[in-house]
Length: 302
Image (tube, rainbow, N blue to C red; front, top):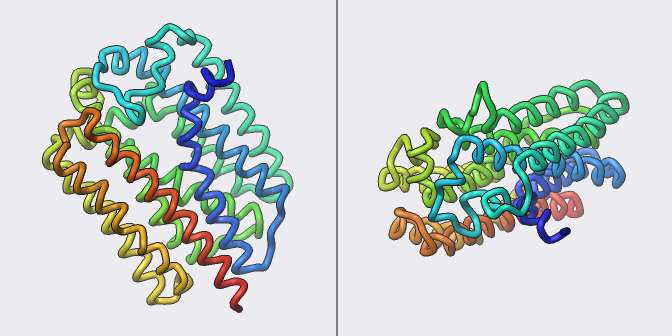
């Protein structure tokens, strides 16, 4: 049963919110010398709960639209968890569990609102509402080509800023700049995974950027996402908006390049895309961890 729910929750993708939480907390320690372990753990749980609710509700609404049911080219990384399609968990139970996770996130959010300040309420509301409306009516963001924007915002600036604010109760330009690469990398996870979903998405009128641009043209979009990630890191380091140690994350460029070149050869999707998807996720993980480490090193060196 546990294994089944890990699959339904798509738990491995929780890294998309855990990594920015670590980064925001590391920046707070670097700038203010403050680290509240309890707040950090609660922030991780809150972010994971929102992500869990989003994943479950997405599967539910993609089932209702027929999108996942008609998908015959799903992979380990794309096409949803498939637990509804395989008859393992009912659609109703998926939806109810999604609402429970959103409710758990709300409890943590209200606690932080009372103890740390009202900005947490704003950040939490944006995360929960946009997460649910990602595939739900009336907005259905991902069906309108806004999926990457929502994913990048929620798993980048929103989580990084939230984790940072919970620790120090203020914001800074530096934390905003540092959140941009991790946001673009989060958007890239969604972006590259949607190549395999192109045909069922198009049939279900799910107008992702891949559907709007077409797979061949959309390949350039992935190169652009990666370019922005590394350019922001370089410019941020040179301008001292980010620690110079942030440049250690550039060692991940070959990993990102590998994903891009595989995508360029196999943009039609299918199993040949799996190495690209895996490399893309590894890039997100390693860049996020190295950026966090750079702030720790910089803090120690002061």
